[in-house]
Amino acid sequence: MVIYDARLVRTAAQVLLDVVVLGGIVVAVLLGRAVSASISALAAIGGRVDEQGSAFEQQLRRTADALGDVPLVGSSVSRPLRDASRSAGDIAAAGSQQQEETLHLAHLLGTSLAVVLVVVLVAVWLRYRGGFIRRASATRRLAQQPDGTELLAVRALTTRDAVGRLGADVVDRWRQRDPETVLALAEIERRSSGLRATVPSSRP
Image 1 (cartoon, rainbow, N blue to C red):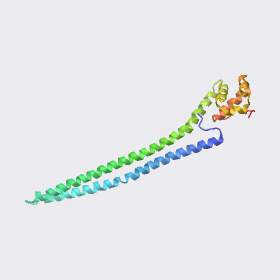
Image 2: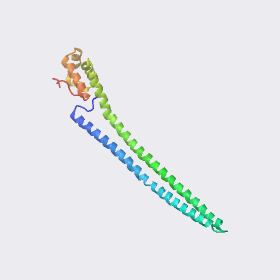
Image 3: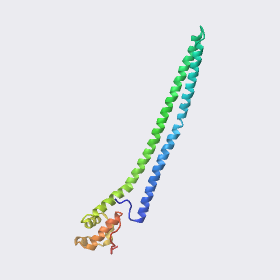
């Protein structure tokens, strides 16, 4: 597998893209965690409501139980307190639910943001780096075949503008299977695909 272009300038650009994408992934994960933490802070409100509501509920219930022991009027006096205690319990339950939902939302949004950013970065990397790796690796496999040099020469003739630098009669010389021309064409294809040259060419 060919990972980097043999040409120094393009290698530097590819390394820079790798570093940027890797750094972007780290930033995306950190940003997702920061968003999750920020939203999770709101869950503390529901937690306090739950805690204070539960404490108030217990206090009202204990008071109602104490007043219920008063002869004659105990039941009528304690009934409103019991109703208030149930209401406080409902408020505490609502606070607990709000806390759970907020934490779930924080996790969902934080994770979703990180995943979306990472997917975008990976897509960019695959578009530019993955495409090069695939093409360069395919070219190297082609070059390693028994007739690899001839196959690269044919590809260069049909796809590379740089072939014109070999002269106006390059096609005729290729048809005549001129070894120097075939080799020069193959080297154009290798260099254009990001592979290292195998032999020096006497032509520009």
